[in-house]
Length: 394
Image (cartoon, rainbow, N blue to C red; front, side, top):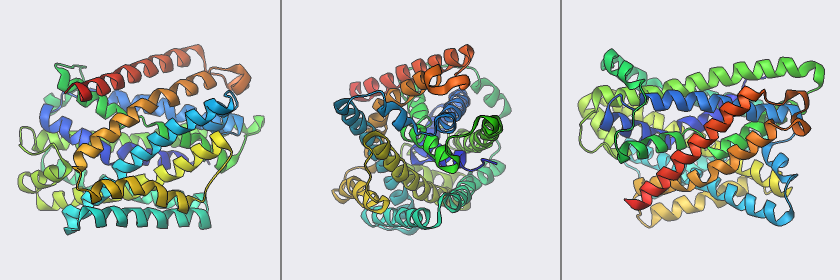
């Protein structure tokens, strides 16, 4: 069975950026943006399956497939933007871990950023020395810890059924809702994990032979389906908890404020579990992000640096930002804007690759899938352009 790669990819769908976007949406607009998470999870499921399919059918990662179509200068330019996106994503994840250590144990943000980097370094050592399967099991274990606090909180503060039903109807009443919806999508469909999933499937099995490909693709559908249901449930539970317990509460525009609001409006236990979930999310997602960066570099340039060296290099921006006392919430927002620029560069090549008979052979996308994926790409690109415009316009 090919179970495991999708769970590693799913960690990116519950990173600190998701915490900030989902809780802010629920606290400000209640259940009104629930439809965004449903839509985003369905989109992400298709995108991640097609990414894994590329790895199985071609025996290459998506960056390798892209590199074969580009000249040297274009490959370097493409790599630079993909690397910038991976580093900006890593920035948000390290800062999220640092904030969690601060709210749980009172550690300074700088110390928290360093500790988050060291823990991710340890996890990468396990990957390089013990292999992918052990790494996957650890990441899956961390992923299962994340939803505990939200489920406990929802048990104590059950969501309103009528509000949930109303939240399934698409609505964007003002510019702030567009901004939040774009941020929620941007925190869900992440470029680096699209690249990564193709490599995880490739590394687990290599290029699948024709006679076993059908079985492996079926297993991949199950892997992606279960992993995305778990990640989607976590994201939805964040929004529902914020809508049922924090709507209208002041100070919920930062992770620290959400922690304090949960403690005073729900329970200190739930607040503590929120902090633990945020910490685990930061540890796991930044490890996955560093691994994705290595995949991108190897695929585009056919060069690599040791994962541990990469970890040290990519943590420097986060350490510098918190060391200079820059507002971590603002840093998170800027990182999401940078991430937005990279989404088309991942999704459009995925669309073109999986729609090409020359690349995919008999496993080319059916026309309906190509149409659906084209619509998904268009929606995500438009919403992320709106995110960029609204961020700078405000």
